[in-house]
Length: 384
Image (cartoon, rainbow, N blue to C red; front, side, top):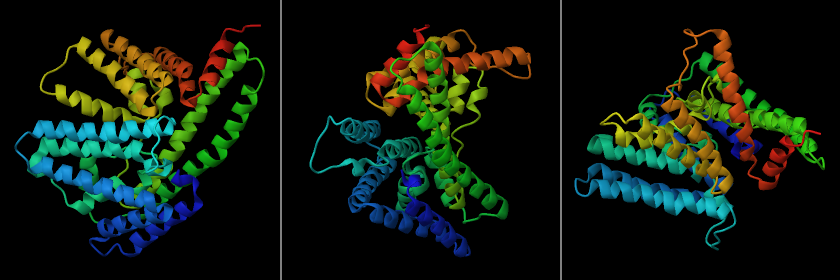
């Protein structure tokens, strides 16, 4: 959302300039970033700023407690995770779906929570597994939660990586600066030019009274490309600004169209989201190697959770279930990966084609519109 607001873009560019001018000050990145984040949120919305100030303080208290306590650690850990998921994550989805109403809240309060609650959970995992060794200063924790470049769009930052960067002095050389600026421009071009143009064409074709097979196929493929440019455009801008502010940003899209299996697709498409769910569910099975049946069941669970993360609807539930079943089958048949160097090009690209076909059929779910999804699927059966 911030990246569609020119004032926000200018503010972030101004912050980069300030960081570069004060780079000789050892603490510039840590101190100036928290001031910038709070001022940015305050100017955007006073209510939003106050909410996140309280939300961050409360969760930091829970984080410190989990680091220090030796009594009922697992219970405290589970309670902290559940409180965020139930009280925040589900709450935002119900509010956005117009199911939950409360005069104390409005949509602006929930801005960014879908991403930030995952960061809070990652911090709790860090505290639980590292104990006293995992405790960090409040300013670094706050910078992690309130980091503006990834506040509303991801990529999802890992707590340990962000803390490692916080200890390093601000440093952006000419090569990194050039690459980051190009990344921001590319992201803006994708989001403002390409997505706007593609959305117009998609809506134009969809307006036809009756869809035929070729039109539905076109819409499925077109929407897949549209979603890619939309998501990756946001990621490009976030990565560019994040790196200019002195932090390492993980790649969110790693050539997903050249994925020869659904397993590899989800390591390349919205990669940080898939990594988050894999890391935080499989972590409890790290002491023993799960069987293929257990791993397949976990794959289905993870994908259903990823589906519901996008929205509490049957569309997203079945979207996650569909991908989870494919991942489970790949696991059971031992076809989760393909080494390009050990197979023929024909076989490799055939597997890529099959994977993309499976993705294309389901990606229209991201439209979040039952009527649109049903019209396009029905159109596939209209051959005349």
